[in-house]
Length: 123
Figure 1 (cartoon, rainbow, N blue to C red):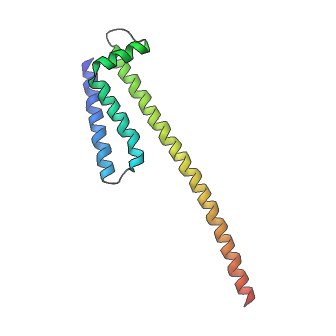
Figure 2: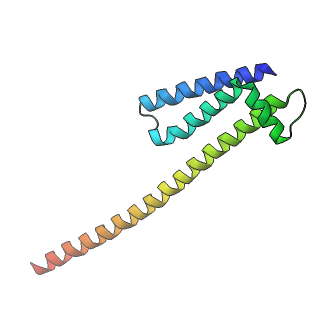
Figure 3: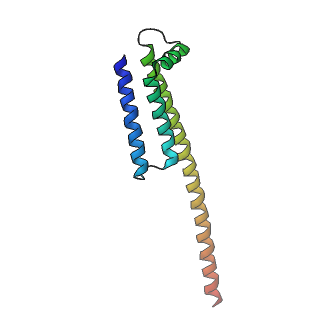
């Protein structure tokens, strides 16, 4: 039971270090790293703070000897689903922006082609 909490605490610390190293090396933008950093900090706090974890398990209605680690896994899964949902929204927004930018570029190229064509005919 405590082994799982220690493993998740180690995973959280590793994730925090990985996020910080990725931001430092510019592999990930700061605005995208905030979600991962917050999720890792929340998991670290929950894996180390047994009293809060027991209260969360009780609020979830999870009883028994393995209530705290099970609650920790449920919260971890929920946190990462939220992070993935947020990133999906960002990707969707970027795709929409790319489509709009491609359309504006096509319009500009069309206008430039007509402008050059008109200049050629005028000479």
